[in-house]
Amino acid sequence: MRDRFAEARYEVFSHARKMWEAGLVAGSSGNLSARVADDPSVIAMTPTSISYDEMAGNQIVIVDLLTGSSIESREAPSCELPMHRVIYRELPHVSAIVHTHSPFVTTLSILRRPLPPVIDEMLQAFGGTIEVADYAASATEDLGRNALRALGNRTAAILANHGNVCVGTSISAALNAAIAMEAAARIYLQSLQVGEPFVLRQS
Image (tube, rainbow, N blue to C red; front, side, top):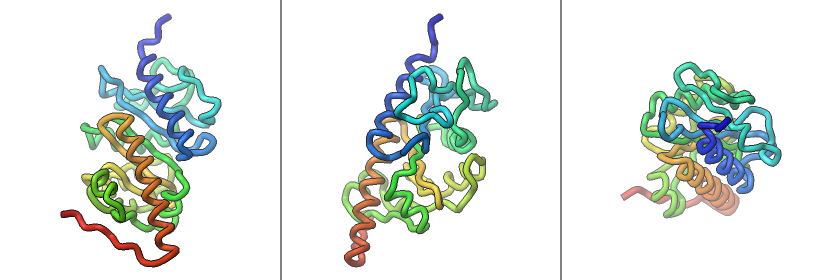
């Protein structure tokens, strides 16, 4: 029987592998999702508790955003589904969400320190400082609501003692934001070991 969600599953699966290969996640940590192209009320999402190096494309879960229930899927979605649902519900222009536990970003999240624009690329990619969301437990809607407030009009936020969340109009855009954010966090933390970084101001 033909899988009507095969294209959506593959898109999420292929970007999940890229996320893992970029070192933004380890094991089965982190997650990503994307709206199904012909039905924005449905998303494709990485499954829970399956390592990226063992994950198969047909294990990507299809979820109804309204009910939170799975559709034609054999696995359970990531436990962070509540956060994704909140963001999608409140930000209809967002087509994809990437949540990582990348090392340098997560270090900032533990310090609860914002990531200021210390390189030109950050101004271009994010428009300014990436803020830290108030702490909320994993797998809760509170995490999503706090992430929303920290996002503002940016495409990324730091989740206190957790990692980050990046959003985009495509799954590629959201993943590229996560990659750029981790690179900037590494540069920022390295510069703090030498002195006080000079922060760029948005013109």
